[in-house]
Length: 389
Image 1: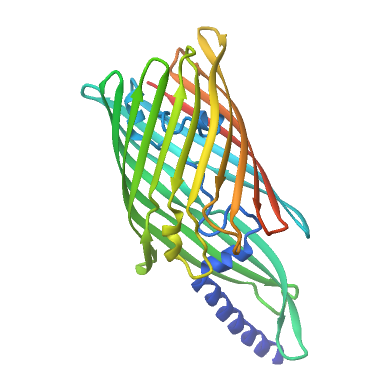
Image 2: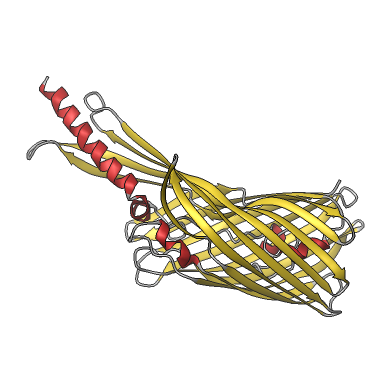
């Protein structure tokens, strides 16, 4: 009888503890996640196509398969549907050892259709921030001053902040392409805490969940200038309000991050491009969505890469790609800014009489935070398939 009363008291303590964690979910997630890259509201995938990933991101403002610059949509000559998958294999090394995790991502899917003279419309969804993490740690739950029970806590977050874009691209002249986009920023985070006990016969497992939803909007515009040997692309996104809600309750509001970027490519080699890109994201505008424990920073993202025509496979060219990327990640680990450097390589070609475009990229990333004795390394495989009916 006494043990049953103790169990109820323990359950009440656990319930209060879990509710407190859920109400301050951002700091809790920062402490619990066993990585450097997915702090705060998640990891920024870059919104790159597999082709662009192969060049380290350098072609982002020029590539119609990357939902970055709507002006590039004018390059699509026929109806097109594209899909992308990107599993990441991550290892995090600290003084306590090395942890290995695998995250499956589906960061980009969209369709496009030419309409009218020189116009192309597109509707697609891409991942702005991916927040998938699990952490397990052991503690001791004290029942009285002299009585305690071992407890295992699992903290898990599943979800993402997605960018659904309705875009239009137009080519009024052979040297000029322009585009506009309307963006719905949506998604959710499912946050769950499970606590279990070594003495499962006397203490039942306790689970608490909460779903947090995002809703907001933004607009974007872009331009591309084309000459015989150089192509340049510029785009910008202007963020509107972004709300964070739990069920029907509005918790807080912020702004969708503003962004601007530019790519310049040398195209004097037939069917090839050597490019450089830089962009800036105002991630700090997301800071007010969380508690004071959330530290978001504005970030630069710079890359250089090449997409070169290689040997032929039948009637089609095999494209060879490589690149380098350096950037600052949007959310600090504690009070420490996280930086990332990536080396990339890739292949691409057309199949089925040109009706199927296949792209493959391999990315190796190193992430560090100055002042922290932790490092993160990741291999990411990107596979993109585009179908033209």
